[in-house]
Image 1 (spheres, rainbow, N blue to C red):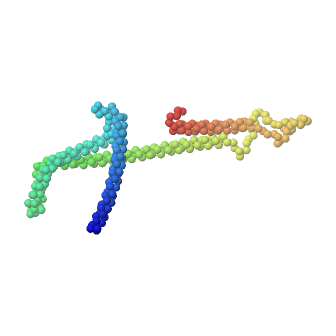
Image 2 (cartoon, rainbow, N blue to C red; image 1 turned 90 degrees about the horizontal axis):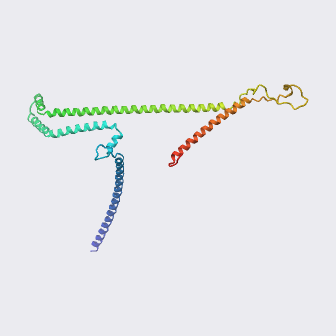
Image 3 (cartoon, rainbow, N blue to C red; image 1 turned 180 degrees about the vertical axis):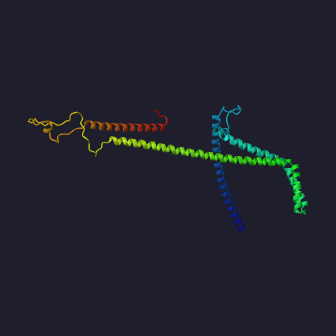
Amino acid sequence: CEEDVASRQEGAGEAGAEDRVDVRYLQWLQGRLRLQWGTLHAQQQEQCKLLHKIHLFTSGSHMDQNLGHFSVTETDLIRHPENYKQLLQLLESETMQLEAFLEWKQLEPVYWQWMETVLDDVAEEGNLCEPQDAREEKRRLPEVSSCCPWADRLAGQMDRVSRDLLALQEQLQQLVAQRKAAWWEKVAAGEELQKEKFSATARRIQESVELKLRALPCLGAPRKKERHGSCRLVLRSKAPGSQRGIAGSVPREAVSALSAAGLIRELQGREASLQRELQQLREQCRQRLQAVAQGCQGVIC
């Protein structure tokens, strides 16, 4: 009796543990189901929002007054009108295939009945020789074709479907070739544009460097002393007893021929270079201010 009670307690404990595990597993499944349901609900809400936007933006544009708006497929076709022909060809091909399938379903019992008769004839004539079988088959084939005119029609439809598939394949190859050619043209045009931009930038840099080099004075080259007028400026000696000529009374170290015209040209060149640099800095500041203003919404410049 004590052993039975102990075994029952152990069995009850194992059953309770299994029940607890099952409850936890069910709770986990319920939480996962809630999470997936929330995700599905959010996706459905997003789809409804997008569909509402399409209906709102295309309201009053449909020819059917009962609808009043475009569907998703119609909106996509309006955005990409080149897909009209492809969709039309696809619909025509599918329609032809469906028509052929419907005709086949109507004539399928006749076909299987004919196959049963052919198999019965083959089983009955199994003891005949092969040349006789060949002659009988050649003799029987025109009768079958004459008794079943739908076979020729079905074969013609299959040929037409195969021709349509070949035509679609050729059109696809042509479309791929056109897309490749257009892409290569775009790439070539982009490369040419980049080359032109690079050459223009290089020319501008070279011109600016040449202008700056022209504006700089030649420090290493000896300067040619030019007169600033018809007479050369010299320093007079302060000695009162000196009554000799100007050239003889002044020492050589005190005489300096000042080139006023060269100095003016140098100053003018420096002024022009500084003006150009100032204009460039102003333009750069203006562009930066425009970029900052475009990045800030609600700012009026």
